Length: 444
Image 1 (cartoon, rainbow, N blue to C red):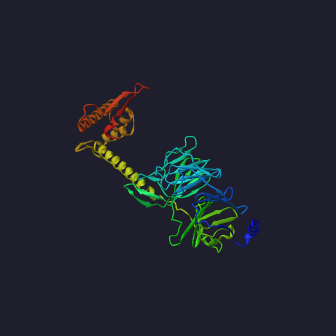
Image 2 (image 1 turned 45 degrees about the vertical axis):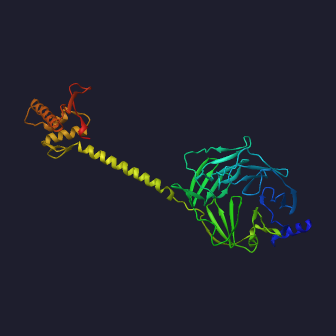
Image 3 (image 1 turned 60 degrees about the horizontal axis):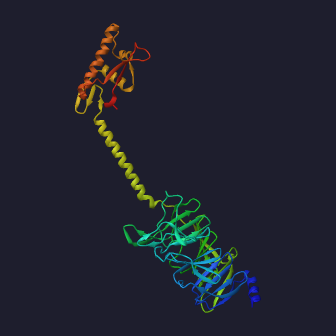
């Protein structure tokens, strides 16, 4: 009989083959082990191992921990050793030597419904999960030393981590992708809604990145059968087609089912390697069906981007940012407006401050502009504005001093100030030169 199956298996390159499994109606759980190319079928008191390399089956008696029960359990393989975990969080069971034993000191707290469960670096990790009207956005891992679930610290605490439960998952060597999950309404914690967000976590950087949005790759009008990840590609099998998701290259390709892929229509478990697709059926006369991978997919129907870069989720942040900028500009304008009201306005024929006006001649306005535009003004520069050729140097000097004095009086009167706004000092370099400066408080 074994020789017959081997001969049949050798010929599967042209015809899809099958291996008779028998009655699988009582199977409680199926685990595929791609590393050792085997499928484990668990029943109440025994389990069956299907060796995909030799197409042999062997059945062994199963011993179970008193706390163990087949029900809402998830499974993870670490070095091909099966671990069984309560889906809601807490309990951990390990299978060794045909026995399933509990190895944790925790309890089934039911705080991680819909969490993401995966293996990394020989440890069991969970992300997120719903409980107590909250979706958690952090990682936990099972510590074999403490036999408890511990918190996994992010390296990058600047970026937001997504609050998503029951997502679809693609797990690569260094990245975890989440899409099409469930979120909570932050204003109504009992209200859940579907999200089209796509997120990526990079383990080496400890960093979350929001990638965009995607349509659900499962067609509601097309009966959903099974999904499987092979390497970094994910395949979704439905009645009429197969969807391939290449998350690294952001590509979604839909193939029409071939006549061989349709043999997996009743499949409840699938496994794939580089060359072969295995489909395990269920029923009184169950078969493991085998087909070459290149013949499993039909004609390509369409190809497009899997997710679209979207900034819509940042619109509220951008709105708050624009509002803050607008508020800043308004405050700045109001400040300048008030400051401008306290400034002296230089007119062509005089000075105006608030509701007061003082008239000035052309020479006085020139002197004032010169003092405003320069930090220090020499006596000769002011003298050049007021001097008259018909007068002696001494007389012109008196005219200059008088102009400065009159301007000081006008400014004091206009501003109701007692101190002179125009002052003079001797130059440090040449004591014969006098320098004039203006207090510009009311001008700038």
